[in-house]
Image (cartoon, rainbow, N blue to C red; front, side, top):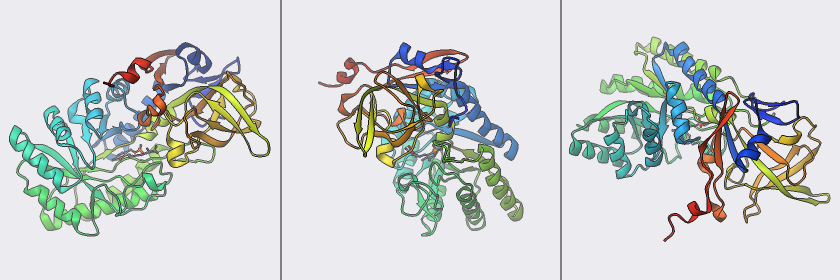
Length: 432
Ligand code: LLP
């Protein structure tokens, strides 16, 4: 009935998340409100971790891609499940460390890490830095020389694999700002360069082919390409690749039209490729890292809005306006992403209308979705948009000086604030 398994309807006909009445949450904390179900975050995290145990005999690490959803409480939950994290900026790194994340389990990304960010990573003792270009390797090497430390680096490789996903979230093809290309020999030269840097420990390779990928072929192809490159490095440079980081990108169910595979299926398909290649080529099994972001956070979250005005344009469409929009969920305006929505206080009723849910920003494209099936709704009703736990809060903005919503975690029938709602004071805090 719902796209995420943590959603249900109670005896009052209201939508629940993790067993809690969402209309009560809206009353207590106000709207718009992000709600994250801690148990589902944990069980998603565990299913990836269990797959590493099952398919690689525990010889690996799941690093949650925190760009999907980051706040201190999320880093704490992730750490308590034994996962590491992928960070991509000084801000994510700082938040992770502030929440007590073990720096050894942090993987630092970015195609243009600043000098200050690299310095922070070295000072905190980040376990793995994924180098994206030669300029960065030079900067890191120099920084390490100054501080007398050595950095463990992986090189980001473009495997040249075309993932079947939206153009803006594909990253593995040659025309991408991320990483070193294989086809041109750039990646091979980059490894040679890394091996020559006195203060860098070349420990491995990384690739990430894209996001919201719903089949296994792209992942299998990327694994094959990466293993072939590992063999080439062994044969031609006598280089040992300790770590193979295969990135994230596992797709989830946003609407009934999506039919994602269980996470284990992605993991198993790739592990077959890796094991077979290692056996056939007498290569030791690398330490495997994966970086799921969306698949851990998205299904666990919903966003609650209050309905305001409704505009019926005969024979064209009905707009239902809510008290948030592209500021808290920019995914429609960016990628025309589709979501499932429910009127939380009428969740047991059939969805017998089709509406366009509009946000409150001064922008015509500010929509949560077009032509969405929904229960009849009136001003004051609460709309829940499902599977918004990833790339919503983390991509939110203050456009039109709207205040960022609060984030609430629910667990065991209780709710707690993880991020406070912004205030008008916050909006002018840095204005001079
Ligand atoms: N690792 C790397 C190096 C990445 O660049 C990403 C995502 C991930 C892991 C996690 O991918 P995931 O498992 O979440 O698919 N804002 C877009 C998604 C951008 C993804 C960027 N990189 C969206 O809202 O769909």
